[in-house]
Image (cartoon, rainbow, N blue to C red; front, side):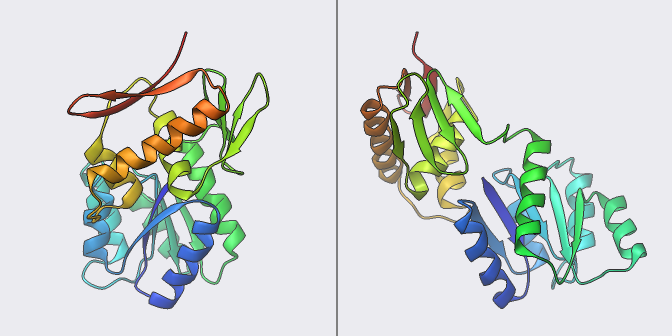
Length: 226
């Protein structure tokens, strides 16, 4: 899952990034509202976590501009503003949830997961294609018929999750790079090919009846084999 964190406190942002990555989230950070708005507009994030007291463009303005552009990204406001009027205004501008500081990391993670399910990106804890199951909590890929399984590393897991959430659709290499390596990534196309190769070997290892098919000159598509 791709999470955008818009937070101007470097110390808090570092803490949250570390915690979210332990939960196998891909996290990008914007330290001001203007960058946060631009990154949220890219369409590559599943959830945005947004502070309100931000430089250049405050959180309310970010919310308002995104919703005016019909951007439906789920947004969790994370703010020290705890007055009811502050919360009401955030929801009026389009926030989906509101969590006040200080907070428990575990609660933040649960709320992010809930917003993702609301968007429809995560259905329970398992994605599947053919007889291949991907457990989103353990990063394990399993053949549902033989129960043979294999562990996926960070980028492998993120790429397989992305593929399974977009089965039978052609995904370009550019989309994969932005989604897995980040909005401002300088990663090259051969990085994608390397990780696709890793996944194909692991799919073959557990004898799953699905494949990652290359679409010449464009990218890849994932489909179950009959």
